[in-house]
Image (cartoon, rainbow, N blue to C red; front, side):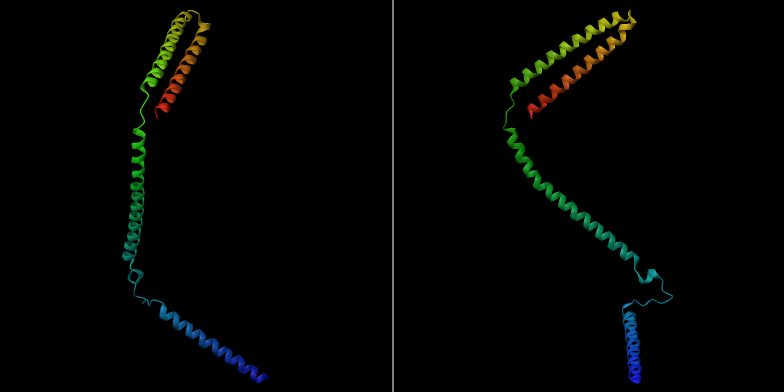
Amino acid sequence: MNNSDSNNKFKITKIKVVAKKQIQEKIKEYRPTINKEESASEVFNFEKIKQDKKMVMVTGVAFFMVLIISFWLLNIKNIFQLNSSETNNKFNWGEIKKELSGVMGEIKKNIKEIKNLQSTASDSLRQPERTAETKNNIELLKQRLSDKILSEQATTTFKLK
């Protein structure tokens, strides 16, 4: 038994060596042959690789450009249809004039208040303790006026749409 065990071990070792040699030969077949004199740039064509990368990039950009433009063109048709349906709606010019004259009346009223406060402010220059209070009142009225104008413009714009 001892003799057969050593024969089996010898056969297994021989099979391993043969298999290893076969694997190394296969690797040599698939591996590109590089001579020591050849440089990496001769084996790998870096210019071709660079051109290939550039080609892939240009192709990708062109694809996405075509994709975006096609979606845009499809969407434009819908936009024109929406705009044509909205132009059929007529504006109520009488209501717009009424709102505008109301806003203008409020603006004139607030301007008169500011002028009155400015005249009282000149009077208050003679009284220094009232000057800061009057300035605060003027700023407060200016802020209320600008808020009112903005809110009226926003509602008018909203109603126009």
